[in-house]
Length: 239
Image 1 (tube, rainbow, N blue to C red):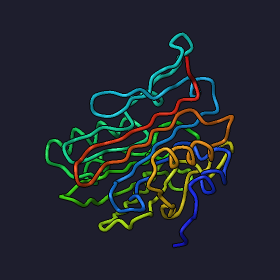
Image 2: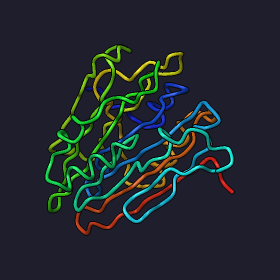
Image 3: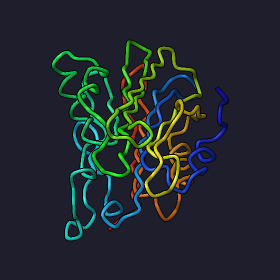
């Protein structure tokens, strides 16, 4: 797989990649890294911000008076369960959290879910998990999608990265680009470069997103020796 040299280059290929997850390892091999972003075309989708909570982040309406249907836009994208950091584009975060807490696996939890019921797009559910193990970690990515827009078939893809490579991450997102209906992401996760500096990485991600459609970005670096985390949230909507 070709290594894309910059996150900004890959994210910037499309005006509307939708929602996206990146997981990988910093170049110096000392940090597990994840990023999650959301975009929006409608006023309802753009009326959001990320806020920090005790075990991760949540989406919240920027202007509660303009909030319409909250069912697919208000959720917890990131939750931490012990040595696991769960990152998803919907309320399957809670499904994974609760079922793993009960002894099920990441994969078993996602077999209870399908793509989003937002016909005719049938937006894929994308999910990722980082598992810290001693001074190392592994990560997984998943996408649940309709079969070329056919809601009668859910295609399930799981990708496991047992030995992360310093300076390299993988990126999945919901849409190939803009359209009506929106075309679902296809193919394997895309390889990206992960720098050591969290602010540089956050800037690369944010700058790569389309100015009109980007809404919010979350980035977290996890120190593999200490377990300490450093996070950044960027919201287009600000008070």
